[in-house]
Amino acid sequence: MLSPIQKEIVELPGNLIVRASAGTGKTHTMVSKIEYDIAHCHTHKAVAAITFTIKAAAEIKDRLTIDTSNHFIGTNNSFAIEEIIKPFMKDVFGRAYKLDMSTDYSVKVKTFAEGLTKIKDEQILCSYANSKENFIFQLALEILQKSKACQLYLKAKYFKIYVDEYQDCDKDMHALFMYICEILNIDTFVVGDEKQSIYMWRGAYPKAFMSIWDREDFSKKFMRDNFRSCQQIQNYSNLLCDETRDLYKTVDDLSPVIVICTTMSNWVASVTQHLDPNKKCALLRYSKANAEAGAKALSDGDMEFNYIPQTPISEITTDAAWIYNAIAKYFILPKYSAYDFRDDIPNEVVGNKKILNYIKKSLSLLDECIKQEDTSAFVKQVELIADYLGYDTKEEHCKKVYETICDPKFHPAFNMDELKRIAITFHSSKGLEFEQVVLFVSDYRLASEEDVYNHYVAATRAKAKLILVYINGDWSASQFAKNINNILGKSGLKMKDIATVINCLDCLNN
Image (tube, rainbow, N blue to C red; front, side):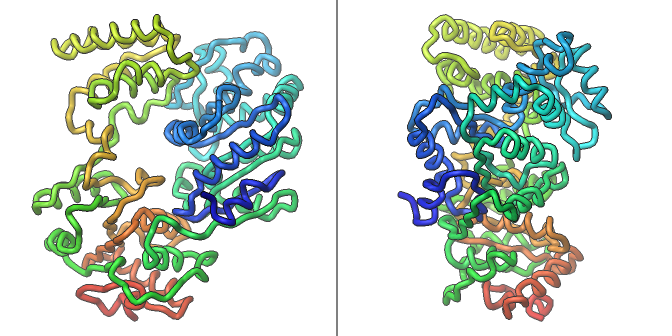
């Protein structure tokens, strides 16, 4: 079922920008719109649904009830690489660049010219040392602007593109997407929420998203109703930002939002007495070290929390990264089979028995390597699997797969959905939801727009209970208190008006 605003968005033609606050059903709306637009397109043309992560792309594919084989559903980078750079780079830079390229963003260059040289000499698509610039999208735009064949190809293939989480686009991504919209005249749908921009530190440019909101050639819709969180958690998160402050609704029950003023030595006991042990809970911290330390402290306090670490393979960005993840899942997840491995192969035809038999045999050989603790043989076997499937590997990456499988501390990262209580960084929590969420206010001083956005994202992960921990004597916590008072004061409110404050300090009510 679609709400009235969702139905309007789905049926609205042409260029469209949607501001979708947390919990408003963004993915459901986007999937419904893709299906509607495809059903009402009476040409041979396709759509491109572009997301930031492989996981998000897979979720869109899983939710779509139509055949997606002729459409592009993938990440920003894969769109730029597969649809623009690889097929048309030779048109702009010469036949010397008609190459079988691979990606490895751990390889850094300082200039555009160095990036071109790296492609020509080593067949590697790399990234800039300066994280605020994007080599892949600068290259893609250069090719698109200069290659008539590339322009004609995209115009002939696509009637619409959809870009998810647009607030996380950087300036170079924005330039490419607006060229496709303005110059190629391909209808463009963008959805995002400037309040959920938590990647400015690595180049995200939420002002690009808001610049589209001001354009006359885009229709505009604002999804503000949070279907995830209870009313009082909605109240708290909505009061943080100017554009949602008017959604505040007075309620009698303030218990869903709890502020606990405590000490570092007593915070565990103070928090756990307010948690329901039978409901899912997440401790969200800014740093990995604090998330891990928090999980240990809570577990020592007789309420087990699992710290979800970054795995050794999580930062691998080469084309073969999916192979490493598939192998790890096969050995870590009981329900992940050779069939799942086969289905994870990009662009592979499901049902190919030859490939399936090869995968089964290869995984059996890897199992023997692990049982014999033979790292070298394991690495060699992974290299053979990748080579068979047409991918290049690196020895150090294969060793990271072995480490991921053999060290149990990394296993929770693969079955997080089955764990009742976890501790992660709030960056890792984006897109997730939990019945109960515990935050330390010292992680969010609210001294900048970025601080406020970070806190908004963390707070809106909670469905039924949000616990804010204030450590007495902590300078960062005192800064939070000062700034939250200023923010709530814009609505004539104090913390005691929107939360249950335990062991209240004057600084939270002044």
